[in-house]
Length: 114
Image 1 (cartoon, one colour):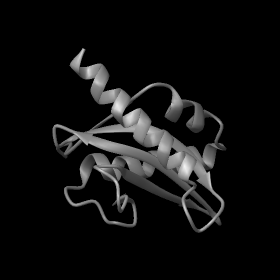
Image 2 (cartoon, rainbow, N blue to C red; image 1 turned 30 degrees about the horizontal axis):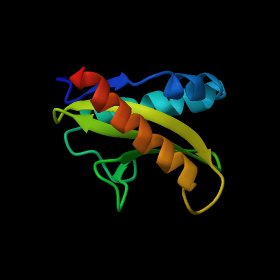
Image 3 (cartoon, rainbow, N blue to C red; image 1 turned 180 degrees about the vertical axis):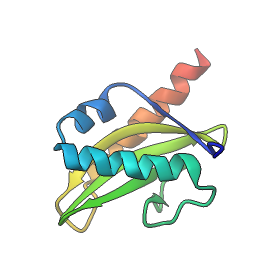
Image 4 (cartoon, rainbow, N blue to C red; image 1 turned 135 degrees about the vertical axis):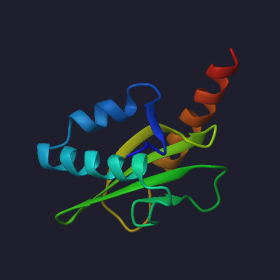
């Protein structure tokens, strides 16, 4: 099976988040990454554009009754850049998490230019 997308990390934000999760949650994250890597049209259930942002997406992970979000953006169409992740405890995504993701996204593209 040909890979549709490559996933890379920007900084340690995602890794730090990932390592704090229980093994079962890590497995679910890996499962969703596999879908993102290999499925041409990823279902909105797993990957959705964040309304009102410039190119910020959230990877959506549900495990048991917990909801996790991993922010990411695209670079060159098929490169997925992971930014930060968090466990969602309310209906609305916390603004500070979105602000952090946007800052990391800017940082990523700025570091590429240098």
